[in-house]
Image (tube, rainbow, N blue to C red; front, side, top):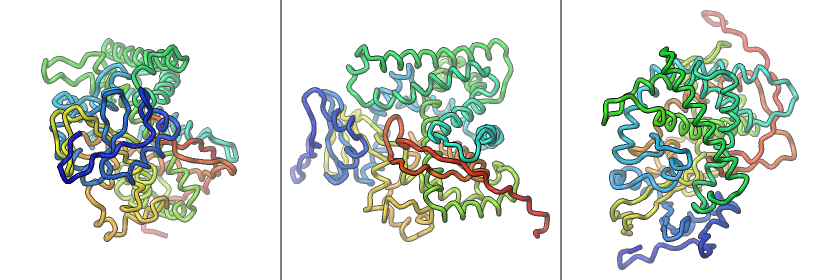
Length: 461
């Protein structure tokens, strides 16, 4: 790693061991370790793989430069490369360069506004079915409930009627194993996954089972021919730009499984954190209920309501700040690049942590306080450096499903929180843990049914 003459070397984080690198502090408390790097400079070196330098970028301006200005000269890096390997194939999430551009164009029709509008009713129906089974006073593992709900919404929007109940139950069980294991597989040295450990055997078996279930759904839909109007049908109509041929079953499977892992895990984590914060902050919950009464007037949420639910939008935005689900996003230099005063050689892994970035007191006063109204402070928002708040990333690799995700989260919370109030059970320590995403360590809550919401008569009352 070379630097300008007037600059000190990029510091190496403490705690590295021969062969293992920084695996020990990452396994012990990965979030605390990555957050600790922010005080060590704008760039800090860590060791994730032997002979593979990784530079963690902490400065917002340099993060933005990495994601936007330098994007044409960067690969997506180890995290996404490894995720593609772990899941058995490249997708729009894991691909880089022209391959990413091509895959993004193939998938883009599924995320157009007209399609998202059609999905709202499907999403809301799954939330209503989930909460219909709740009983007042029972203890609910909210994290697990939100994973199940997210998978149900995934099935409704991606698979529609392409999976029967038995196949979907198998998919849910195996996908949960994959989601729980993919984070550690991506971050740990490659040789760890080759060990004959029960966890490795379980992960491999579940991954192959998920791909088999999705492949069966693709084959069945191709044989029967109906267009179910879901994402799976759209992918089957998409053509490979290079060959003009339909996407292969393997390509479709790779897109779906990556969307399932990335989208389901992220949605479940954000929903869990929002419900937790509504429980901890009664005034926030009260204001949300008032907005739901004013905008919805007792009727189910519709796509047209999403932009009108402005306070709920700020609640979600604040959850994406305080509890961002991303903890290490990577890129890799293809050529020598300049970041600040440093020249970074080709083949260097670059990384940044949204979770730690969004909690930095230099950018967010009282950063651990959940305050949706901080986004109304125009002076504070204007003072945020470009690159200090990146809920969906930036640049050409910005999340393709950002509008879909916001619509899904808004629909789910408006439906769920409009029907039930959830209270965290006492004597539990709820803290963030980083697996595939940053999620609550444990979140047990008891539901209380809210009073029925009456419809407002035409002309007011």
